[in-house]
Length: 322
Picture 1 (cartoon, one colour):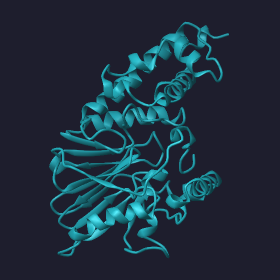
Picture 2: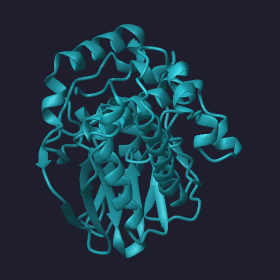
Picture 3: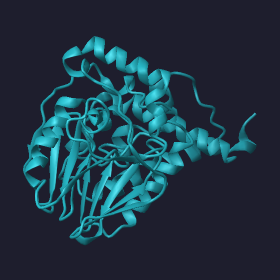
Picture 4: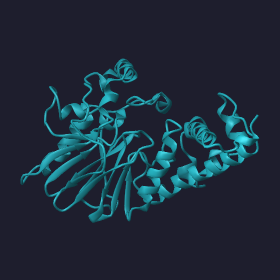
């Protein structure tokens, strides 16, 4: 899997160079939430020893805005650290401000040891070329810059007043990390959980993603913030994501045990035959129901297909298949 497989997410969406600083909604004042249009939230964490930029958004312009908000805190010996939660374009394409020939404020970029190779994959380079052609004002100056401090397990940053634990949470991608700050009972889940659900891109990623959700939900977190969910979603979103995949599994398991054979290429036929419409698989509230149609059809069907594949590999319904 490359840096992203994003055609399915774009929906003809255009991007913006602007960031908004989100008004604090009750989380610890040392965390700043930065929003890039309707696309993604990123974070600044201010500790006694470090200022951490958690993801660098989509390009040098958006990363520069994060850096501008971080600069006033780079005093009394504080150092700048960059964290890439994973190597999707909306989380790391601003890295060039912090490493390489284009760096304006050199700083370590912490990321998974699996992330670096993704920047060199042909599909990654092809996607950047396409984005530069479609939106040169957004992506024209972009230079691929992988993380420079590579980690493979849990990684702990002692910020003095705050401990920042980087927790491997694979599934959405194999290189994904979430953050846990135990002193303030706060989780930054990144893309391990989302509204309406995180996306497993491969069948093998699905059980990993569900395990990651369970591990995050087991933490004693009072505040949970996400990259793709309202800041009001809270810890409940972890539980709702878990419930979504539990229900999808139950529907797929029942279908396989009855001898179901999945149709090819027709999303709505698959959803109907599994008897698993999006509308009844998620909470019946406006914020869950009023999502882009992609999540109700193509995205939902892709998670059903991943679940069917995973269950079939485990032998579920094998005796009922021809």
